[in-house]
Amino acid sequence: MSETLKNQKEHILKLLKEKSVMKQDVFRNTVASFEMVKKCVDEIAKELNAETQAIDKRIVVSTLETTSHATQLKVAGDMLEFFMHTNVFEFEKSHAMYRTGYVKQNEYNSYCGIINVYNFLADSFKFNRLNDLGYLVCRIFINREMKFLLKQEDR
Image (cartoon, rainbow, N blue to C red):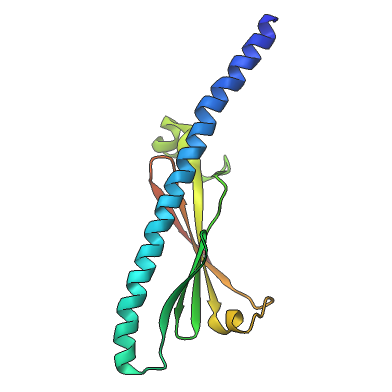
């Protein structure tokens, strides 16, 4: 094997060892974070539902896990959808985070999993109105060190 091919192979193996392992860590952290989000959403729903039922039985607060990567919080006529993306992403090089010491110290800190939070009208789901608009409320980015960034979306 030529020296060039050997160097290329070593480079590929180094990337697989470092980058692929890092992405697996990010994914595992995102799954763990999403499990925490689901648990918090369930707890909030139970507490609020108990209190709203004392006010008026028609005010329902409930949760529904639609898939292993999506859960819903229904609050009266509104629905919050929490959706965990199954891929790992790197922020664009122009993002402000690249000017921080944290990312300058280790560029792998810029790779994140994402949990999106959307707001819909509950009736959109109830009546299967697929063309109704929902709004992206925020995105939660989780990295390999279990650090997170919450980005609130503008409307």
